[in-house]
Length: 353
Image (cartoon, rainbow, N blue to C red; front, side, top):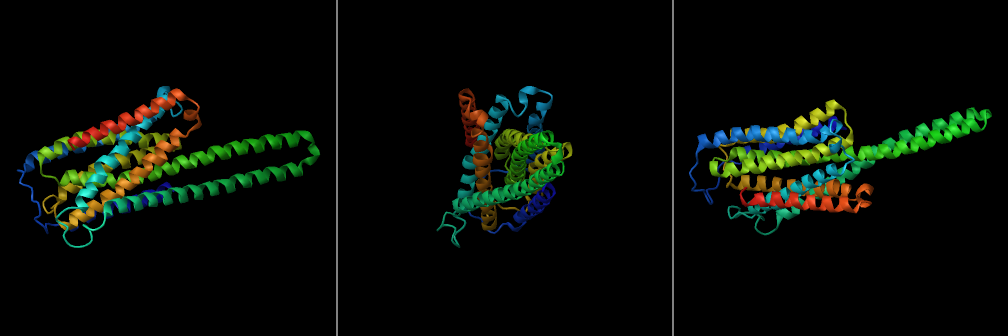
């Protein structure tokens, strides 16, 4: 499963990175009069690459410290609070940063031809992306849970056959079979929950990759130092807590060390790679050309829909409906406040980036 999703993500990454090459200067609509400092902008882009790389790696690695620091383990109140804060950051990124950008691009006065001014494509594409994520999420979870159930059923059948062969052993063998069956039932429940966590971590990473490439290319293609400065701060903050959210899901999925390192590395490199691609196409890229507006607008809308679903369903609902949270009023208050603080801080950053 992990290998297939990684291959799909890599193919999608290559596809997305090639789309802006189609967006050459075709429209001089609303040409910016701001002076461009290419040398200063390039320095800031290089700083951004390292800041975002370090923040992403640190964020993804913090939840894994629970093995050494019990306060950060997945069954503590602090873990739930930090994960709710990270989900709030992701949610605000989607609603306050990405979706308005999609509406602005697809509603641009440069798009005089076609249906772009007649239909709210940004909201429509975001809705379709959320539905598509739901379909992938449910199908993947159902498939792997059915496969796990078949294995558990086969194991239980083997125990029953073994018990029948040794019926002469009397109550001892019957009791041992009953104990083993109950043990398998408990393992089956744990296995189903583990599968759910693994599907969530994989789908979340794929969703993050989509918008990480987009925002990285947007930063890399910009030639305005004044526009890049606040973006560096906003993206560093965003990647740190997005990494914490993803890292928390990875820890709950209980992957082997090799898989954890691969997923963390993949997440950490995606946005810096987008920045590098943006730098490479900056000389021929015009953000006000119709093709650029349409491509980026549609991708922004899709990313917003995916992140909306992942933040609300797979992160917040999953934790807020957890029996541990439901049975602890104090913890409910803590994670609700943590969620609101995360959304508020990320929303405030929208005033500058």
